[in-house]
Length: 249
Ligand code: PGA
Image 1: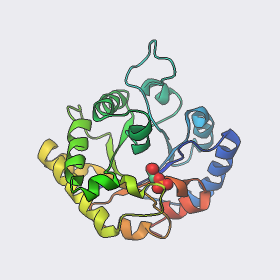
Image 2: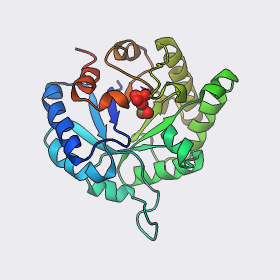
Image 3: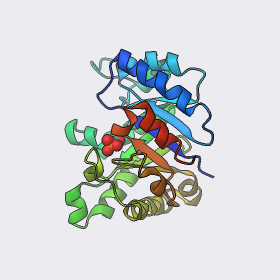
Image 4: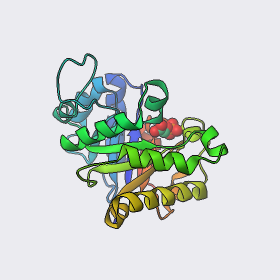
């Protein structure tokens, strides 16, 4: 039984006042929700504030990235240990925006994922093809490479969540159809099975991301291999994020 995860990726949005308002609006809307793991990923500077506001609620805290070293002369970086200290239980790794704009590679994703797990965080590892890769017919090769290299040599998979986010569906309003998403998720689960075994494939949550909204979440969540959603734009408002969290109601 894989518990669904609904995670909100706030990206580069929300000052501390705005973040407080969002969390204060969200808490009452999800307080009776059961059977769903709820995660929010604010910017680093408001983690502490959001940690205080969510304490005692079921909402878990994630960062949007981390470095792989624990400490040292690495100006501007932040370590998994520091994220734990700030109240995080989760961290997003390898988001396509980081791959696209900040030089993230499968190798750095792998190092960060190992470091996150070693520090006791749950890593939400993002993968996904670009439109060109899909059109060129190499989507499955890309997904296979991202899974096998990004997740290679992990000590354990129990703290790993995979997020499939087709790059062409992120922030564009174009969601993959339920069928397209299910096909990709099934393929990813098969790759995990081939590389890391049956038990790991059965237990690993695979989230869909890319223009998830209250209107399309239900159809996606009905797919057998979709175990949740990583939500960008629609996570920035309490009512739309709560409607996604409460997809089953
Ligand atoms: P979106 O972003 O929901 O705004 O498409 C998803 C993501 O990038 O995680």
